[in-house]
Image 1 (cartoon, one colour):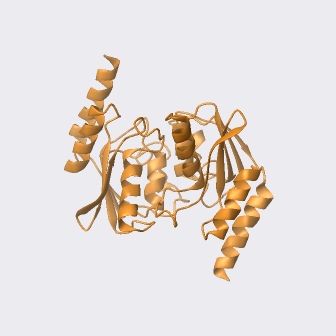
Image 2: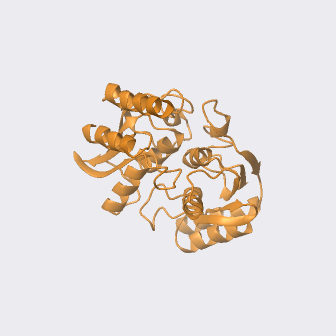
Image 3: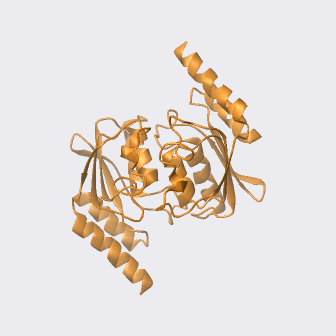
Length: 143
Length: 143
């Protein structure tokens, strides 16, 4: 999660909403990403999607069974769907997101009976630092 | 929708689940894609995601307000989330998907109060041909 938080901080410095994500396999980082929707002109370039795509490409597979995803913010519905498609084994997220989250809030994707795969979910890791990055980012943009 | 159906048929010929999608702006195709999860080693490479990414890149924007998305199958939760993030104005889909759909089934993303943007939704266009492509594809794989 330390690396994901550093990626989030770097995203903020680049003018992107500060969210970072890392995919690990057997404790080793196999893919990482930060929110990059503006710089890449890609509305799907959330940190989780960037990290999942990087990991699958690096491993030469289209499913990441046995891999874990670490992300600083609760995934939205799009990213939760991607996590299910990728067969991620364990999801660790930092701050909850009552407005945009799709795991513990909103559509609660992994609680839907039609969701084909559900990772183990662990929340609250690095929550304080993850939240602070987001609050500071949006405060600076309004300021 | 004719172009989306042709893209779906081409996907089947390439061994991918046959789903095709097209993004239009003022009646002109600005992005297109077919399901390519296997060939690209990318669990997020559903037709809608491929088409949205292509359109945003082509137009040099990170939001596709005013654009329409045409897809042969009901979008899943991941793709419905991407459609909301991209601010797609109108969604036209062919066949409904009771098992994996996220618009008219399952999490019904656009009916969630936390979903920030809802496109107009029109279904059933080219439904027969879209369904037939999928049924034939899975029958051949089981055969």
